[in-house]
Structures are given as structure tokens and as C-alpha cells.
Length: 206
Ligand code: MN
Image (cartoon, rainbow, N blue to C red; front, side):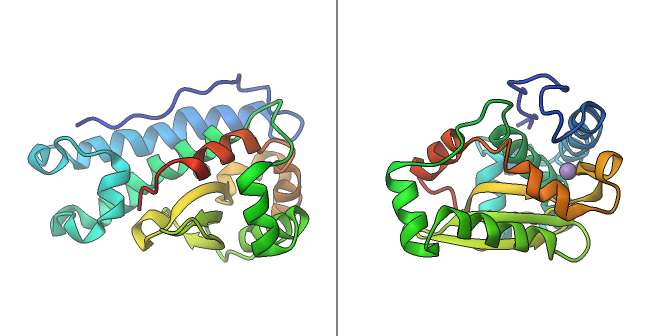
């Protein structure tokens, strides 16, 4: 199996002014592409292991990854999966708020959409070092806010991610320098709740 990055449904400059063109372009064509190339390289010779498996399936069952390539698959595979999710939930003209079942679940779990956004923002901002803030669902569809280090994905811990904020410095440093909080505050203008709703409705991956 060969694993690929998603196609963007928007141009590099269309997330401005919140995320600048050079950051989107470098992030997608250099950082994400680097994870794609390294992952496929690491998996050479392991075709029997990868045959018929999606990346989600591989990372949902980390104990089945061959020991010799375990760390590389977690890091590079997580890099592909996490970035594919990140780029897929951003959109220049996003649906601004969730509705229906997802909104109901957000309100009953966190009190309000504003409170959820505050908690995800804090999880992202307070991540020490490189990582991600998340909204995830568990096997019963219950929502949870989390953060993770490096390229670890919630899938490996039994949760299905439905929203993420990349807080590696490469995702904001060109424009925001050290001001991670400003980037996190602004990214909500780009998060497409239509896409998050889709992911919430889909079957659990983990
Ligand atoms: Mn990144």
C-alpha cells in the first residue's frame, strides 16, 4: 500500500489573513509531503503488513505494528494522518457553527459551543512543545477534549479525532512568531463545522 496526502479543496492563499500563503504552501508541500515520503519509505519491504490496510487501521492498532518500524510508523504515519485531518477541516468559507446531533452533544457535554472552543484552544495552547489540540469521540460517540505530543494520534489511544489544531511551530511561526495563542484564536475562523459534523457522524475508526 502507498499512503498519500489529501488534495486541498482551496488555494494556498485562500486561508488569509488567518493563515498566510507561504505557511500553507510550505506546510502542505514540504512538511506533509516529507511525512508521506518517509512513511512510504519506512514501509518498503512490509507489504504483507500494509496490504489492504488504511493508515487509520494501522494507527488504531499500534500493537500490531512490526517492532522494527514501530516508532517510524507512529511518527511518520501520524504525521500523514494528522495533517490530512488538519487540512481537511479548514476552509476559506466554513460553516461557522455545528448543528443537529453534534451541537446537542457539545452543549450537553461542555455547556456551550463557546466553552468547547475555549477548552480546545487551551488544550492546544498549553501543549508544551510540538503537538496538537483535539476534539475526539469515544466508541460510544461521547466527546472529549485532548492534546497530544509530536505526531501521536488519538486513534492509537482508542479515540476518533474529529477536529484538530496543529500547534507545531511550522504551522504558525512565519506569521505569528511566538504568539501561538493568536494563531489558535484566529484558526476558528477557518474551521469548517460541516466537515466536523461529517466526521462525527462517520463510524468510529478507533
Ligand atoms: Mn504540521
